[in-house]
Image 1 (tube, rainbow, N blue to C red):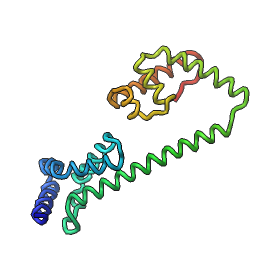
Image 2: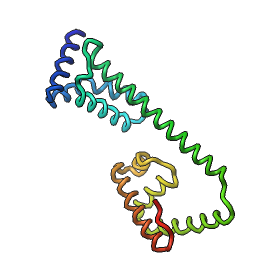
Image 3: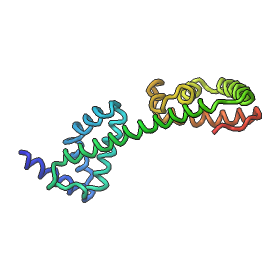
Image 4: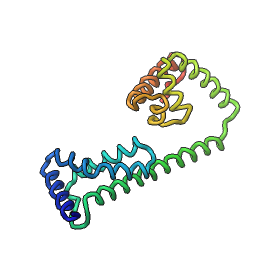
Length: 190
């Protein structure tokens, strides 16, 4: 049975190489469940896991010649790529967090002079005032992302709103803040 399944997968990959989209759907039907399961187990985030599955399937679609049926099954190949991509993502996120913590620690150690502290407090008052002029949905998204320290994805979950909508709100809100702060005589925020 294993040999028959492996042979069928090899034929599917050959169809992929010929550009048959239906072959990719069949690959997903056969192997998508275990691939998604592994990604979820490693990442513990269903959204990130789905992104990894999509990336692994797209990689197979773009480079079907990289699969060698003599070295193992298609499922093993897909699971190996899923594992590698998931581990890369975990390492990347961990590295990003460590870098941000290090930068925050260095900023605290650097300290500010009394003049800088007064300027920062005045600037904070202007920013708070400008924020209060934004629509509630936009203000909440900006506050969670910039003051709460949440990622766009986390903000989207907290506000039960699509991530693309959150990104748009934040982008338009920051542009509006730039205008409001520029009108108050302060340099625009970036």
